[in-house]
Every structure is written in C-alpha cells, then in structure tokens.
Length: 298
Ligand SMILES: C[S@@+](CC[C@H](N)C(=O)[O-])C[C@H]1O[C@@H](n2cnc3c(N)ncnc32)[C@H](O)[C@@H]1O
Image (tube, rainbow, N blue to C red):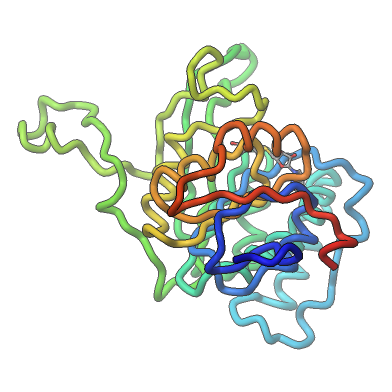
C-alpha cells in the first residue's frame, strides 16, 4: 500500500500527479526510472524563471557525469545569444538535473524539442550530461498544415536522446515495431514480410484531428512515436516517467506495453483528460491519481 502522504513507491502503482514538476521531482527517489520522456512547452513564461538559475553545481563535484565548470562556461556563451532561450533553459535546467538524478543507472532520457531550440539544447546537454552520453537525434517528420513559400516549410520535430552511462544502457532494437521498406522490390520477400528496423528518421502522422486517438489536448503527441521510444528503451515492469505529461500519451503507451509510469502536469485540464483517457488501469497495473498539495506532502 502507498501511504497517503507518499507520492511514489517503487513497489506502488503507476501514478498521475497534478502539480509543478520541479517540486514533485525533488521528492522522487534517485536512479529509479529506466526511461524519461519529456516534451516541454517552449514558451514557459518568463516570470517563474529567473530564480531557478543555479551556479552551485561545480563545487562539490559529486555528481558523476556532470561537467561542472565547463557546463557553466558553455551555458554563459550559449544563453547570451538569445534571451528567450536563456529563459527557457533556466526553466528546464533544474528539471533536467532532476531527470538525470532520477534516471536508472542504465536509463535513457528523450527530450522532445523543435528546430528553434534543439541546437542550443544539444550543446548544453552535451556539457550537462557529457558528450559521450549523447545517443541520437531522432527526427520525427510529418506532413501537415500550411506550407510557407518563403523558405523550406519546417515539418519535423527533434528528439534528443541521452543515456546516463554510455558503457551500460538498455536499447532493445528487436522489440521495436518494424516498418515497411521504402523500395520493397529491392529486397527479398522474407525481408518485406518482416519489415525493417526504423532509423533515426521517423515518418509518422500527427494525431489526426478526426481520429480516435485525439483527446482534445492541443499539444498531444502520437502514440506511435512514444511506442517506439518505450519499446526500445524500457522492459516490461520498468518505471518510465513523463513530467510534462499533457494528455498522458506516455502513460497510455506504457500501460499497453506493461510498464509502470509516473506522469506529472500542472494543468488541471491535462490531469482531467489523462484520467478520462487512462481510467483506473487493471488489477496488475492500477493507476493512482493525486493532486499535489505542497503543505500536505512537504
Ligand atoms: C507540450 S505539452 C506535453 C504534451 C504531451 N506530450 C502529450 O502527448 O499530451 C507540455 C505540458 O507541460 C505542462 N507543464 C508546463 N510547465 C509545467 C510545470 N512546471 N510542471 C508540470 N507541468 C508543466 C503543460 O501544462 C503541458 O501540458
């Protein structure tokens, strides 16, 4: 049983939490989640950011894998180019540190961004996690919406993938759903029947505005994209987390694939939609919903 004032127990149920993710992350145990996927909003608002900037990390040097002083230097240079990105990063940085701390020793982080922020974020994450921990940049390509005539229309998102330990991480390539060959006439019928392993470029439709997957949450991501991520970077029974959970896409997929999950979102609408979408779970994989009240839990 989970006590009422415990937000998480490793032998407890999957949990969906309404509240600010930073406070909640700080209450989660270290080295627990095999997979963390996050899709943070870009315009996080400037007001909450400034106080989150921290410069204390390098002194004690106890966090193996973090690059102390060099990270601070890189951050100073990168963020000086772009105020909006500086705000964004100062919001994200303490949350990424918590992601690193709560990742299992063999765990993987997927950070879903778009072309505006990904290049800055790549350089900063290289410094924060260690360049050797960078595994991939996944390009999720789609074909939807208006096409500008002034430049190449941008029709993709970028997902940066970092592992905690490049010498020992989980990657289950054989578990991933295969996809059709682009030129089936060039390979054997056996290969056509089996399909091919996806590469780091994923063609996948957006959530169809009229399809049954649609929850009504504006920033909902497709289950098909999350499914590959969960299949490749976790096993049955593992803990996975999305602390910008939105409509609960990671939870939906995790439940189908028998992983346990923690979702966090501060928006009551996201919490409500997730509850409708996921229900109470099953006997083996039940789901708990809680509203994080700092006074009660701190
Ligand atoms: C881009 S959406 C995520 C969409 C999600 N991947 C899905 O498939 O529905 C980002 C989410 O982050 C949430 N969010 C923003 N700041 C937050 C914070 N400080 N704590 C918790 N959630 C936050 C927003 O409410 C929003 O639902």
